[in-house]
Image 1 (cartoon, rainbow, N blue to C red):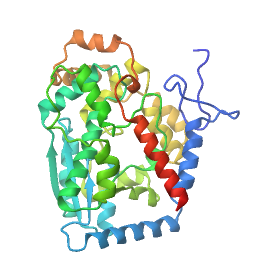
Image 2 (cartoon, rainbow, N blue to C red; image 1 turned 180 degrees about the vertical axis):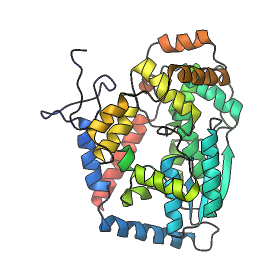
Image 3 (cartoon, rainbow, N blue to C red; image 1 turned 90 degrees about the horizontal axis):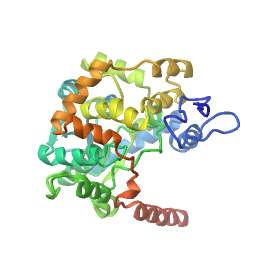
Length: 374
């Protein structure tokens, strides 16, 4: 392509991301947004470490008289596993919650088991009703939307929040962090918190017209008002308070827990592997590894040259991808003819389905006005 452009700091490009904007120095808008976010919320040495100690002290104070201080959603991946290790260093009493949406890799299951046993954490596994999950994910496959991980991500958030309320837990530890996730394309991304959007996709594109009562979910009121304001359930992100490194985390986990790496960002889920390696590149031309690698570059985890070399190497062979595709399509009851239709159908935006984006924007505006007055 004659108009192909590549950021001179990270490896985000115009082919993968039509929202990419370069400044006069060839640096993209995502890098600038990252710098601003890190300046406000990133690791600041001893200051951040003191803030983390204060946060954990507050969590322990709120946990007095209860069985647990906090809840940790654990997937078996790098970030949540290292967060489980970090919490133990501060003697937090953790309830580990894993949400099984039907796509766990064997490595993820073993990682979770090893971590919780050695750390002495109680593990509660929420098994999502597979017929319901299957039909919802199948509906997303026929929606024309890019983010097929929304059904998994939403039920993970909702299940953890419901479990926290059940045990009277006020804090949920989340492994999201700026160090390894500081850059994320906005071109095809939509929030997994939008329950109205999920219901709209299911109603229009699903073949089963029953309800989603067996699927862990939170509506707009629950997620933005009821849980945080009335139940005081709060998500916190401790990895932003430490000098977090993916390489360091993997080395520690392998040494301490016989933890095994699964090969890619969020590949603890077989569906996510299919979604990121097959669906997104083939239908949208979006190689999500660019986001992940760019995050590591701006975070100092690797050089840009190393990132360019890594993106040039495909993580799986064509035979492996074909095998993975066949596994997912069979599990979702999708024929080859339907798969071809999915790949050829027009691309759609979440705005073409019911959603709560205007409500969220309105509430954020009110929240910001209130915060400024305080």
